[in-house]
Image (tube, rainbow, N blue to C red; front, side):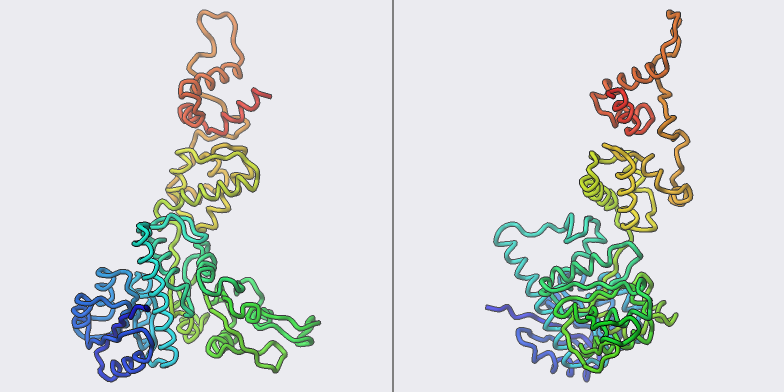
Amino acid sequence: MQRNFQVMIVDDEPRILRALNRTLSTVPGITVVTATGGKEALAKFKESPADIVISDLSMPEMSGNDLLEEITNIAPETIRIMLTAHKEPEHIMAAVNRGRVSGYINKPWSDDELRAMVEDLVASREQYVKRSIVGKVLGTAAAPFKKSFEDFVGNSPSMQRVYNKLEKAAPSKASVFITGESGTGKEVAAFAIHNLSQRKNDAFIALNCAAIPSELMESEIFGHVKGAFSGAVSNRDGAATLADNGTLFLDELGEMDMALQAKILRFIQTGTFQRVGGTKTEKVNVRFVAATNREPHEAIQEGRLREDLFYRLNVIAIDMPSLKDRENDVVLLARHFLNCFSEDEEKPFVGFSDDAEAMLKRYSWPGNVRQLQNLIHSCVVMNDGPVISAEMLADHLTSSELMASGITPSQQTVSADSESISTSPAPVVSQNQSTVEPLALMERKAIQQAIALYDDNVVKAASALEVSPSTLYRKMQQWEE
């Protein structure tokens, strides 16, 4: 038997409240509860928590922001939607980015779109409830955090919030707008939404709007017919056709030509388009996910992003945190990349030295996860292992980058060819000896003595000798040869 879901509508205008109630009462499987203000809504919610709360933003006594924040604290699993007339976009984005709301509805609204959105949210909520019930019955309810999720690695609180949003957004048909700095994993998030949706068996098409020349972008999206322009020697399908029944990801949307943005808006609204040079109207069923590394409202003010297109796509907003805001995820990610690249490059790396992990944590990562990935790959390719040291990391970072993160390059770091052991426990010349032992032999004795002292732990021996483990491994290999 299907569960009946409760949807609470909150608005201080009786006319709007009646209109919303009338529209949503036709959605099967839900019970509508209304409240004329934030305080009334909070009292009703505490008595009988709703599955979905749709609240106006501007209300006397208690604002929609304050109400939804209280509801977040009481029942974080409740789906929270903001109702707005676009007058205060900065407040909406602040609410979205702080996790208070999953999305918002524009005033005035389309009854059909409103019903469709609520139906999608109910389906998403139903899946959540089913998973919770199954988990409790089996005694294996999900842990409060995930160590990894889809293609993501990390268990920081900021990523737990992202995972939660992705899980809720995926089953819906609603468009998603992802923001975040370059290298934070916006395309990974878009693919996770696709892979967790009912569209996962169809195509995921990703277009980087910043990487395609503006004169070719329309053809890339909509395709073209033979003879449409010089070089169009045959008909060609665009991303819109290829993504039919699947997901179309438009990355760096703010870099797209404004005239083409108008065509994209119409495409999203109608699901129809015409190929470049063609006259036939084609219709497809596409889920839209867009992303930008710019602050959307700044891009709108600069004339780089159409406001109406942004609001059309920004039904569900997801903000990707920068790597420096992900606490200890950097070490987890670094170990993951090391394992992957060690296998790909057939190198015997097994981990990081303590000083290397300390450097990973202190570094500011202006290039985010992509920079970390490239750094570990470089270290694996250019070194023999089995341990990544701080010196190896520093070799692939500039002094200015290290200094900007408050990391001072070690004055004891010298080149691999000239590095020698300066902590030899025995003098070069003994008072009881009439001959001098070669420096290489003295160095070898010091290394072997240190390794034996630390029970064959090369990393600890290297730390005591104040050199990198790679230096000891290299010298040991030379001795064997």
